[in-house]
Amino acid sequence: MPVLALLWIAFALNYLDRQMVYSMFPALKGELGFDGARLGLIGSVFGWVYTLSMPFAGRLADVWRRDVLIVASLVLWSIAALGCGLAGSAWTFLGWRAVMGVTEALYYPAALAFLSALYPAAARSRALGVHQSAQLFGAVAGGWYGGWAADHVGWRLGFRMPALVGAAYGVALWFGLRRSAGRAPGARSSAGGSVAELVRSRRFVVLCLAFAAYCAMQWIFFAWFPSFLQERFRLSMTASGWNATVFVQFASIAGILGGGALADRLRRRWPSARLQVAAFGVLLCAPFAYLTFSAATLDQARLFSAGFGLFGGLLAANAFSGAYDVLSEDSRGLAGGVLNMTGGVSSATMIYLAGVWKDTIGFPAMMAAMSAAAVACALLLAVTAGDRGGASNATAP
Image (cartoon, rainbow, N blue to C red; front, side):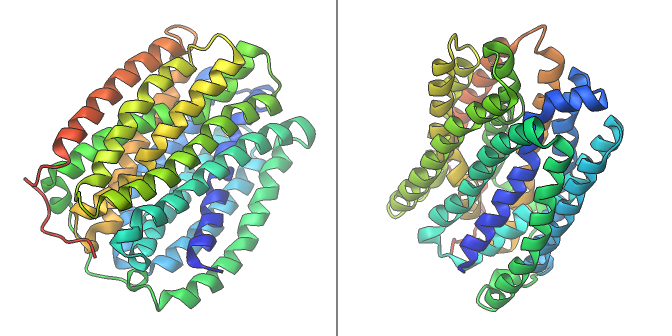
């Protein structure tokens, strides 16, 4: 099986494991005594630990074997998912979510750097975009599966089943990546890049700001959209999990695949195309974030969430490949870790604040402020993308 397909499955399992919990909120509230703030902590604890581990994980991806890190991450996060299913209290559950954050952090920088070494620059956005689409399939599957499991077999068994599947798949992934490691120079260690290179690149710094603004909106969809639909339209956990994921995520897949192909094509004549397409995506998706959480009917919520997903996919397809265009090859793992950290810190913080503020400020006002910030960051990225000042001297192979 091609490496891209192997990693696609692993990344889909990654998101299924982390996403399914959000459709289980009512069950966790009833059995483990979670209140609104601690429900917010389920996403935030994972997000904070995951993202603060990212620079360390990215550095490891530049100096250790990336295939080993990828497989180790899959097996270890499956153990953490099993621990969630065995938790006897809210705080124990949150502790296992923190462990899951560390173990899943090992995957992303290593996988992106591994793929970037296998695919030339002319096809890199498409390859990374296809890999990124697994996140959305996993989120859809997790959103539906979490609600279904909570309604039909119980949330505890709902965690144990994917944990066993993930551990078993780790064996198949190990043999598949080992066969390909010799063809991927990125599989082996290097001297590693430097933080100074990242800081000196104005384009990378502004990209981090735009990515953070987008992720803050995106993770409100991941974490709170099922509960929003359940409360607003009186849906079951299964129905709310499905409606909260299928429209936004499948539209995102279309945006990712189309945005990756578009940016690869434009880059032949326009060196900053990936960053410009990313900026365009953030600019257009932001209004739909506000509209979704202001929807008066379920059909409106579905339509507006699809608009957010479609245009957000342009950013998702090109954020990391755009970063690789302006930084050296030796910094790819670190750059992926830092970029993902900035998005994760903002999203984890907003997941928690949404839990605290949803009954006072409300989702429409929160999303209006977040959308305005995202538009400002998108415009700044569009202006900065063509600026050669402060850029790395790297060339994209």
